[in-house]
Image 1 (cartoon, rainbow, N blue to C red):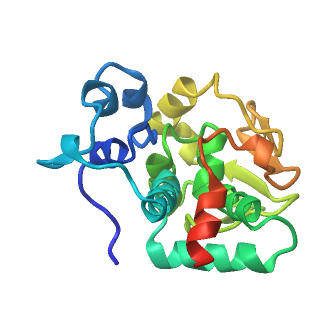
Image 2 (cartoon, rainbow, N blue to C red):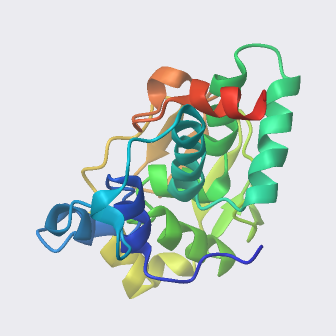
Length: 208
């Protein structure tokens, strides 16, 4: 399955809420969800009440779209979460939060997850002093994430850092804004994740 390349605002409208895929635009009056509060499609406004399976499927799709995950990759993450000790749904969200592209976004090094993913792929970040250009790279406790020295002089990077200066950093990350270096000080917990996700629906879906 190829990565979605269409209009990302359609994804937000399909889920009926903002997925914050376009950075600053999502906070303005131009946001498609605010202007057209119904799913895309010719007959979308007359759709019937959703079944239990439909609710579970929509929740999975919503989480996939939040984090920009393909179907097969999402299934692998669920298998990983299911094998770990603890609550499967919470384990799944912790794994997704630990992706490097999400960490870059959470640190304010990208205005959206798609932008953070692109910056990672272009090689603007290091983990423990080594360049990592794989968005799905999973960070661990004590890992150090930095913007490459050369990249800090980029006008784009400077603009991003200026626009995200007020972003609240999760407590499992520590950021030194002077050096633009961060450290993973723990694993993401459920209380650290501010997204409106009902992970138990995803667990129920895969348990069938």
